[in-house]
Length: 113
Length: 113
DNA sequence: ACAGTAGTTAAGCAATTCGTTAACTATTGC
DNA sequence: GCAATAGTTAACGAATTGCTTAACTACTGT
Image 1 (cartoon, rainbow over the protein chains, first blue to last red):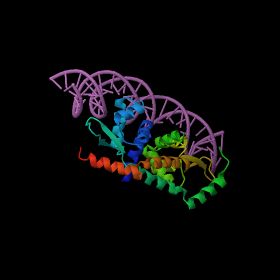
Image 2 (cartoon, rainbow over the protein chains, first blue to last red; image 1 turned 30 degrees about the horizontal axis):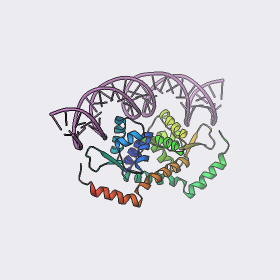
Image 3 (spheres, rainbow over the protein chains, first blue to last red; image 1 turned 120 degrees about the vertical axis):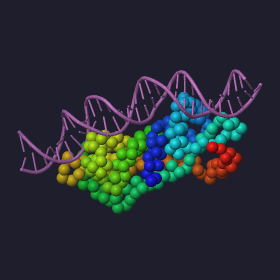
Image 4 (cartoon, rainbow over the protein chains, first blue to last red; image 1 turned 90 degrees about the vertical axis):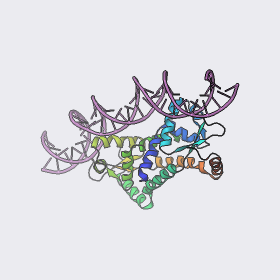
């Protein structure tokens, strides 16, 4: 259920440009043009990236004071929470018991290319 | 620096099949054929996915007792740690001060489509 | 009404990735 | 040595992305 959401989140984050957008938005909300300038991307390309991020629920549009043309984007919390949840599940792999198994296996089968 | 590593990790995780592989390996190490069977993928396709995961450092090959033909795969810790680190950075966006700013903006500009 | 600004949508091509089938490597067991 | 098993590599068409230019929407200021 949240499975699909995490897939969408990871797909959105897989692109370096989109990840750079997230890194910029993590400081403060920014407008599309600002993002395009700072990442040296054309306006259309940025618009396309923003759509992927918006559709994936990672960002949302907010209004900007005094100018209805300008749209500003802000990070949304949920997808990052969901991703963190998944990551925590994965990291259970390294829980104490499995660690001992891992070390056992490592000792046993060490020394191959 | 770890930037590139996180990019590679996210690129590897972006594919649903590869994420499913991670979800299986998170319970215990498995062989390539096992993974292919459980996810109903052809052996070559699985091999290709495993290569992406291996190149991205998300999994590693381990030997299997008694049969040098069989390769088993296990999760590697580092990429997940790096991803978690990045996620934690992003989540600083929602620190207390910024929350108050966010709520302010929300109150001010509410009520648009 | 008109020119300018901010941004998105459309259309199209190049580059990448997906998933096949076929060929190949390496190992086991007879 | 030979057949069978486990898996990877090669080659190739189909489907997806990446990025561009051009056209379009919507608002602003005069």
